[in-house]
Image (cartoon, rainbow, N blue to C red):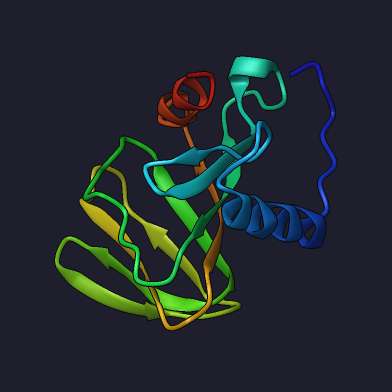
Length: 137
């Protein structure tokens, strides 16, 4: 790892929510109807083996069903919703932390009138490459 990284969660959240309202920005791209921003990844030497970022889902939005080889830690920063892991629906709100086991099918859904803001990290890194590639398009 070459570059040391310091991020402020409040600034990240405010910028990401504003980016969703604006339809995405270079730093906070709109991908498949939501904001997905990667802030640490081995791809840019900000991490050796982990990935970290933030996602903002508009009200009523659900991510596509997906899985990846990494364990994922999802901290809910704002909003309410659910994370469904292998058909188990877990209601979530601010301050909740959900750990998704490796290779589990999962979906994140935003409820209510407010965006759902999720700070996520996982390891080993690798799955974030799909977001990096899409943000360059």
